[in-house]
Structures are given as structure tokens and as C-alpha cells.
Image (cartoon, rainbow, N blue to C red):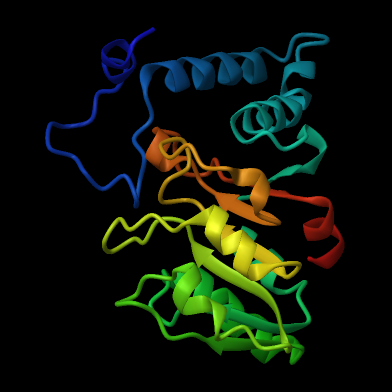
Length: 220
């Protein structure tokens, strides 16, 4: 299947561009939904096993795209919930930009107010862009994690994940990848926690996942 065949499987109105808000589902997904609904409606003996297989199916698909082991992938109802889950598990300072997409800054603020153990450290940026150069000198010993969107939702700026990993060192690196997952071929294994919906890859609303490295699982 080439890109034209793939794009031809979608029927949204011409000019639709709000994929960051809602990803219209294509014919393949609609076919899957119809098949699942039919299985549920008929309730044939032994027919419900297919529903129990979908969790493993999702983890395997995400693992194939990211290189993370399937047992480090978990399903999330939405990206914001996945980020909230990560922030509520952190104790210490978290460096992030005040210009971040609200899902990330809101999660950090909520965790700080609710538990009192996470401390947001709002870093200065290069016109909203987090780079290894402007981050390096702002990482104090009290900061235990750095959180950012890999692609800026306003400008489309792609952060240097490899450079950030070198600067961050052994601190946790938390990435919101919902603006680019499925489009950007990034070295995801360099991050400790990645949370993403795949709307940029034409997945529908309600299909996010998160994955964590071994240190990410133990710390969040």
C-alpha cells in the first residue's frame, strides 16, 4: 500500500485540518468497529475472546513503531491522562516550558497542588523552543525530570531528542509526542516516558498509549 492508497481510505470533507483535535476514522477502522459490534451483538459461544486480544494487539503495534518492548506499553484513554499519570508519580523538580501545550503544564501544576512533592521549574526558552543549549544551564540539582512536547504545537519546531538526552543525563525525560507520533521517526528509546495519541498518524480519538523505560516505570 502506498501513501495515496492509504489516504484514499478516509472520507473527511476536503480542507479538514484539525487533526490535532479530532482524527476522523477511515474505512479500515470503521470496518473493524462494524465487525466488533457484530460479534458483540450476536454473542456467539466463544466469540468474546477477540475483545480480550485487543490490548495485546495495541501494545504490539506501538512496540513495533517505537522499539520499546510490548510489556512497557500501556493504553491510555487520552494523552492528558497519560501525562497526568506520569506527573503524579514524580517527586522533585520538573523542568518545563511555560509555553508548553496545556496538557503538560496542567498535569505538572495539578500534581504539585495535589501532592506537594512535585515542583514545576519553569525554564526560559528560545521563543518557546526548548533546546539543549538553553536548557543546560537551567538544570539545577533539585530537578529530577524534564518534560516537553517533541513537536511544538504552535510552530511545528522539532526538539533535538538526542541532544536533550545528553543534557538531561540521568534525570527522567518525559515526552509528549501526540503532535508527531506516526509522522516523525524519532529515537523514542532515548526518552524515559513517552505519551502519545496517534492522531497525526490518522488514528482516531481514544487511541493514545504511553510507554516507559525501566527507569521511567520505577520513577512514575
